[in-house]
Length: 162
Image (cartoon, rainbow, N blue to C red; front, side, top):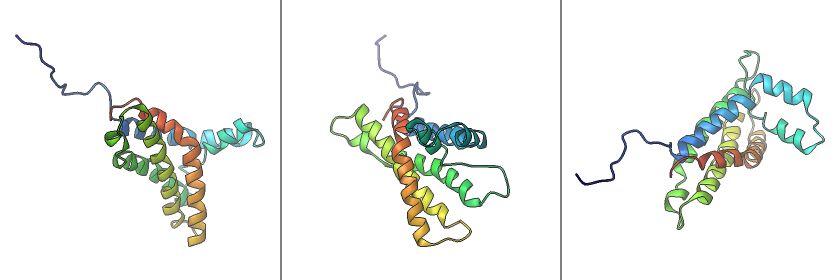
């Protein structure tokens, strides 16, 4: 009997897009939770780099409170959904001249920057007083969040295959 390389029906590792999307879900789920948002707001120093970063991670805040505007919850949901979509759409790791970890890392990071900007832009139109200026400013804030927190998603993307 000859030894052959058989493909497994169940892969041992997820795809880079799948692990990145899971990391985005966990990041938004944990750091956007009301408990984390309250803790970051009261227990960190906004004038220190670490405190500022921990408060930044709370940006995609979500809440079950019905008095909270729909736009904030929509922003958190859109961030996770768009991160998964952009991770799947960005083909850098598949077509890179030298495929490997660097392209997967930067693809995951870039996908989160785009997801943060677009999620914030789209959610701004669901706010009580939507305007184009507020939407563009909000997109800048979302892209900033994605740029500074996207390395987490990029690192998580390294755990999957291209």
